[in-house]
Image 1 (cartoon, rainbow, N blue to C red):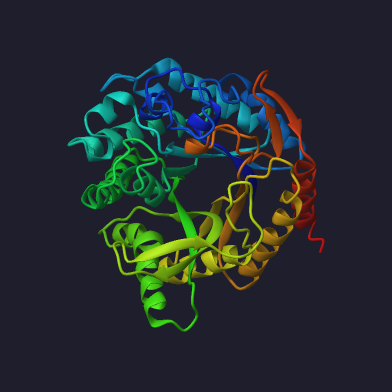
Image 2 (cartoon, rainbow, N blue to C red):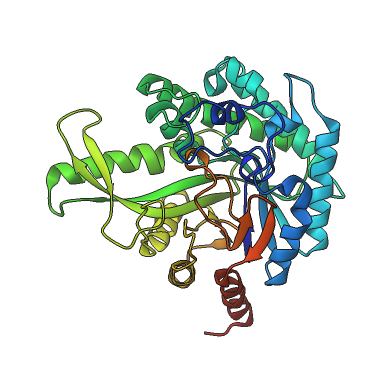
Length: 401
């Protein structure tokens, strides 16, 4: 069972190479608190400090992602130094007793690809599949020997924020473009899987990290709210994996579930004919409802629908005072236990995140870390919840109640 933490390249590494997100953060008003990810937590250089922190509380897994813009800074030209740096990072991770879980693309695109249309570029699918082949050929081999791979992270969130809400690059509000982008992401996963399998590594386990939002009718018993909720579930929670699973060879060994919160759905008269609000429970610093029961619901529903083992690839909250995180961990891990006891084949739990990081359009102010980051020095300071997570993991490893 994988007990771990996670991060993603742009959110922690620092960002010296041109990407759609680097350009986005330089546009006034795009990031709520006006901050940038130019240095972030400097994970690129300080990764072993973070691996030591994970090791220090008994974890055995660590999720990272590959910065596409580092590996392929211009089209068709691969940076071997960047790949060798990732190899050193992964070897250091293994030396700390941590199993690597690696995401090939966590939202951010190289600027050269974004300028050609990003997810809608004519050769996006081909370029992503080629990236997958290059990276896995380098990092699935010894000494890194990575077995656990995620092709994409939260395709539904990327499409919603980038092509419907307009809050992420390229900042569009175009339902037709959103539909095309979602289809291209599914095609990109399938094309990447074909390239990966052709490499012949026998022990690879391939998945996708998808966001799961628990969606419920705002007015119980209201027929239109039930209809709107069903439609929202189909579009947001089910569509992407349904589309992938319909392919002759979907290439999935497991599903990654990122779970954070619940939305209540109310039918309205104007497009898109529904609105979403957070539920009434306690809220995180970002205003997201804390709804632990949703984790068990997500795991059970995903298992019933797709019959694949599940890795919880993200679960956490923005809580700068660390006032809610201990109870959050306790209640969500209880729900994880319940799902496992009910027969859901859960492979592991990766808390989001080990350290504070750059939270996309929200900036650096949203604090998701078990470990606090001083952004002026990149100094790491464990919060009380860091030690509590370690105790919860040890209890479960020891079989204690």
